[in-house]
Image (cartoon, helix red, strand yellow):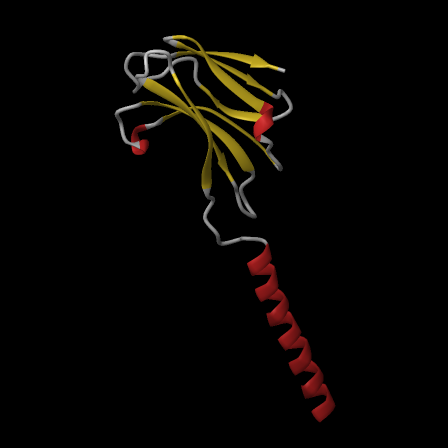
Length: 135
């Protein structure tokens, strides 16, 4: 009888330890963190395009996010214009540049899932038009 109790205690302890290791390694409860990769100002020095990478966690894939913001505004007022995602993202799979003062060109890898794709800004003044090229 004591051998069965000892065996069950060992199995239970291994199960608890395994669960703790699982939770720690797979970031199930962690918040997704966003890291700014690149930013480019327009020729008038009034707006900036910002590329950021969201790291994801166990339930959310990594994503590449492109924002536009007026330079004098805080980062909280940036407007999301493009979001693409996959199990693993590479910042080389998206390129962007200012074609002129009011047009931003975005070139991206067509193999990604695209969730947000705005054609012009709403909250950024003056308005910015966005052109997309899937490669």
